Length: 396
Image (tube, rainbow, N blue to C red; front, side, top):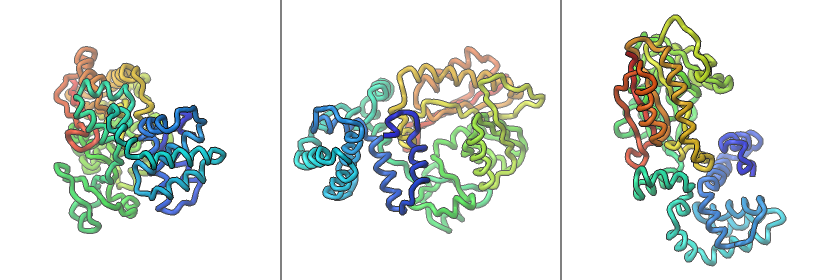
């Protein structure tokens, strides 16, 4: 119900809920599964509820029905347990919730057949604004595959922190399966908490390495990470530089900077200076320019919907026109901070052309001091990693 008000992100609500409870590990896992699952499959669940109950429902009753149906539809919880526990949590609407869930169990086969015939946005629980634009870009088959990808929780993937350990040493110590074409990435069945505490690895998707590798920073150089927190890409830049040279890592949030400093300290990164900066404002005039700049720009996040479960419901059609204006403002301000011959990588975790290829074309028109060199893109349904884009420019 708090999430439905639209003032808080799902991750923050979950974090606060865990801080206020003393759940066991299995209960935390179930809490997370049901909370995120209801948000992911909201449109599908509401489609089924409308088939079962065509009258208006108050918010609490609606949420209880979503929770109960999600457990029946997507988990291995025994039906009697899912129904009983949901009814117990439903308050004054217990009788109604009990009747609707038991009707679902009686009519489950017919309801699922109806769901199978529903449009992809209903069947796979995505808003029409995304389904329509993706179908235009990728076609119906790849759009359905993308929606399926978004509905599955991400695997536990970690980057080996070579400032402290090698991939071979980690695999010998605790297992982990290497990821094809990503020698520094391991897929974990269970991640030892000691690995995180000791800074032996960092949890991130292989797609996040692409921008850093395209930037290719060298030991001894001066590098700017313009939108750095929480520090996943920053720490990989430091790893590529062997902790030599200097990285200035910026963010507009003091809280996010504090979190980044802790992450970098744990990972053994020593060549980073963390600064608060808003690169949409007039940039500072520094006498010393940067050899390389990474701009991991704010974006629509459509490439990482499986990780950011409420993004799909927050996006509006005008976001895809609004975000490129922000992204171009950042690029133009950062271009002046780059040495002649220096490299700038613009990256997003978006799969939308307005934020990727079209931004590259705008740079060529509006920032002629930057020369486009090459770009890379990952698409979940093609590459089995999160969606991301990165473009390399050099300063004339």
